[in-house]
Image (cartoon, rainbow, N blue to C red; front, side, top):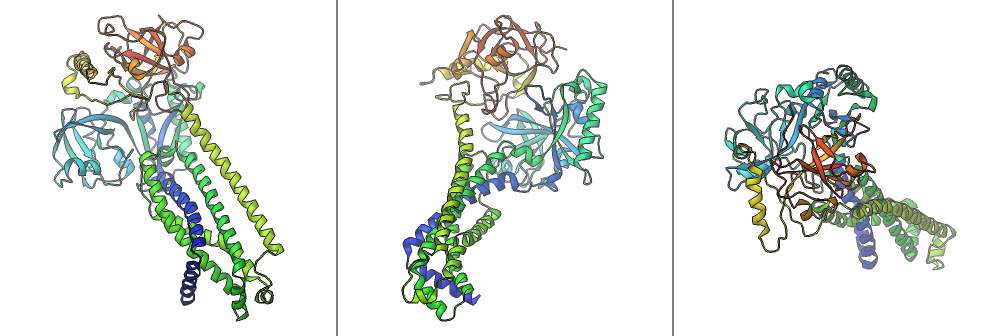
Amino acid sequence: METLWRDLRFGLRVLSKSPGFAAVAILTLALGLGASTAVFSVLYQAVLKPLPYPHGDRLVFVHNVFPENQVPVEGVSGLDYEQIRRRTDVFAAAGIFYYNDLVLTGQGDARHVDVVNASASLFDVLAVPPQLGRPFSQSDDRRGAPKVVILSDATWRTEFGSDPRIVGRLIYLNAQPCTVIGVMPRSFQFPSRATQLWIPIGLPDNAFTIQGGRLEKWLRMIARLSPDATSQQTDSALQSTADGLASAFPPFYSRSNGWHFIVRQLGDEQTESIRRWLYLALGAVLCIFLIACINVGGLLFTRAGTRAPEVAIKMALGAGRIRIVIQMLTETAVLALAGSALGVLLAGWVVHLLNLYGPLPQPGAIQGWALLFALLLAGVSTFGAGLLPAVLTSRLPVEKALKGGSSRTSTGKGGLLRSAMVAGELALAVALIFVAMQLSRSFLKLTQTPAGFSQEHIWTGAIDLPGKNYTADQTWNTRFFEPLFAELGTIPGVELASGVNALPFNPSGVWTEELRLPDRPKSNPPRQAQVGLAFPGYFEAMGIPVERGRTFTNRDRNGSPLVAIIDEKLARQYFPGEDPLGKLVGSGGAGTPARVIGVVRSVHNTDLSGPYQPQVYYPELQERTEST
C-alpha cells in the first residue's frame, strides 16, 4: 500500500506538469464512461433490477393469444381466470386486476386518481404486506360489500400528510364513501408507478361463468408459480386447461385459429417495449467507451516517447520492467478515476433528462450498481488504455535512450501498434455507426409515421363524473358536457371544443370490441375494432380528416336513427371495393346496429410503430342499449 500511495503521488505530480494532456485524456474518458454509466443505469432500473417482490422470478402474467386477430395478445376473461387458478400444482396463487380512473373528493379540490381494481388474492400473489393496516379480504371482494380502499405510499404522504391514523378513515371516490384499510410500502408500485389507490374488483358471480365471461378478455391476470414448477409443467398445465375449454365450449374457444394461453415473466412484460432499444443503446455507448480508451491509449503511446530518458534512468538505477509497467498503469488509473468521477456527474445529468423525457415507466436515479459499473469501466479503461503503452515503454533500449539516440518509441513494434490501434478504432466506429443507424432508423420511422390527427395547437384534459350523481338520467352526458363545451368555446383563442371517451395515447387506452356486420357472414376468429364515443365537433377539433360522408352533429342524439363513423382501415378491411356509407355496423353488446354516415382517416391510438387498427366511432349523444 505504501508503494501504491507513492506511485499515486508521483503520478499526480507527473500529470500536473502536463495539464493539457491530462485534461484531454480525462474529458475523453469521461464522455465514454459517462454515456455508458447513464445507459447502464437506465437499463438496470428498467430491466436488470430485481423486482421488489419476494421471489419475483416466479411472477408471471397469463394471456390469451389469438394469432389471427387484430389484437393478437389479450388479457383473460373471468372464466379463464377461474379455470387456470385451479391448477394449484403449477400456480401457488393467482389474481386479477384492471385499470380505473376515479375522482377523489373530501380532500380539498376534487382530483383525478389512477386506481386499480384488484382481487383480494392479488396481494397474496405479490407477497407484499401493507406498511399500515391490512390487505383485502375475501369478504371485501364480494359484490355489494362495504367499499374499502388501500393507498399507495406516495398518495398517503401527499394527499393525507402521512397521517398515522389514516386506517379507518373515510374518503370519497366518485362520491362513494370508502374506508381506508391499508397503506402499501414505498417500494410497492404495482402495476405502475402512477397507481395511487387499490380497490376490490368485486365481480359478480356470473363473471366467472361461460354466460358472463366467455369473450370479454379485459382482465389482467398475474400468478405466482409454485417453487417446483418448471416451464414445461406450466406450459402443459395451460395447454390442458385450454383443451378443456375448447372441448366444453367450442364456439368460444376454437383451437383451429391458433388460440392458446401463454405466460410472460413479470419483468419481461413491464419492459417489453424498451428492452431491445436499451440493449442497443448500451452496445452503442460501449463502442464509444472503447473508442475513448483507444484514443487515450494513443495519447499515452505518443507521450511515452517524451519520457524515454526518465524511464531509462529508472531502469538504469535498478527498476525492473514490471515496476515500470505498474508505475505507468498507476498514472493511467489516476486519469481513469478522474474521468470516472466526471463521467458519473455527466451520467447523473443524462439520467435526469431521461427521467423527464425518456421511456422509463418507473424513472430512477444513479444507484449503487451503476456506480460499481462506472468503477469497473474505470478499471477496464486503465488496462485498455494504459497496458500496451506501459509494456512498450518498459522495453525501451536503455543505453540508446540514455545517450539520447532515441526520444520516441517509433520502433517497428510501435508502428505496428499504432496501425492496430487505428484499425481497432475504425472497426469500433463501424459497429457504432451500425447501431446508431438502427436506432436512428427506428426513431425516424416513428417521427415520419402520420398519427392521423393534428398534434399542434390542441389542448386536452380529462373529466371523471361520479356515477352516483350522473346515472339516474341517461341524458346526463348531454346536460353536463354540451354546456361545458359551449362555455369552453367562448374562451378567447379557443376555436372549437369537443370530447371523446378516450383520446389517442391516453394511459387508459381505447377499448376493443367484437365487431358485428349484419350484411357479412360471421368470421372465425371474430372481427374486432377499437371503439370511440365522440361528441359533435370531435373530428374537426382533433384535425382528423373526413374522407367521405359527414361527421356527427347535434341532431345525432337520443331518438334519432343510430349512426356510426368508421375509419379507412375498417372500410378497406371489411368493405373492400364497396361504398361503406349506409352499411350497418355494431359492436360489443349493443342490440341494434348503427348505419355508417362517414369515413375518417385512421388514427394511431397506442403505438406509432404498429399498424393501424380498425376503429368505429359512435355519437356520445346516442345511448347504445345493451342486448340481453
